[in-house]
Length: 339
View 1 (spheres, rainbow, N blue to C red):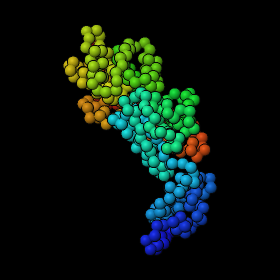
View 2: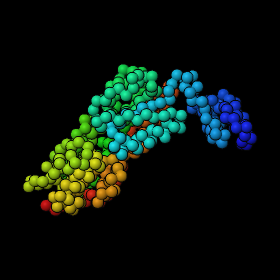
View 3: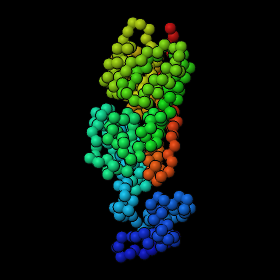
View 4: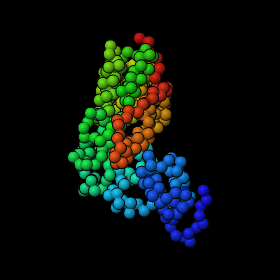
């Protein structure tokens, strides 16, 4: 494929791309409009994309949007910008969107969780679709009852209000944690649970209770921050009663609060107390000992959520998907102390 000589400084057109790729303008429109599947071959589509890149061709999105009646904009609704997990979810969604000429508007619920005002005066006019975390479900009231496609992340698959569901196998994550700790001989457990009312945390609690039947399990709840986790864990661990030998946390942030409490109480980790987290955030390896935790594929989660939305917009099915998770064993867990 040869690139034609410069066109006197003029902006490349779809005709230039077609001539360079050796295809028709209609084929160029199909490929660059992401409507080529089933109509042209993968090889031809890549030839067209390469020609567009070589020429520096950029489609006139404003004109395309007028033709399609779309803004080519999706909204990602998350509970908070301060949570690293959702930053990775955004990255995955934005990268997938950019490949299709879409932009992503990020909208955090103002207080992290709970009700939020309608972010647009007219959501239907401003957006093509919405991707949302169940942890910010109350922020979605403005979109309920509209014809905007809604992809829910980590939410109840039976919810009829969503167009598609994408979940993480958090129940399996909790089962892997319990199998690991039971295998180390632990029988007395503390569950430091998130105080956020959300389907994903309900599933974790149910899986944990089921896996630990016959063992001693106590649950205390905490907001998702280190200070509150410290307070909740300190009250639960500063006792003369037989302490739990393992603390299972709904989030790495909560686990860091427990690590701080253990140090304050003179408990060695993991010799006296094993601690596990959930998410595998950067801080999981910034603490000492490093956290045993459940790794969630956050960027893939965002990417697959965006791909589901794009499929819906193209009139294609978006069946429910559950992504696997992984237990990462590190230094914060060890054999249960001898009685």
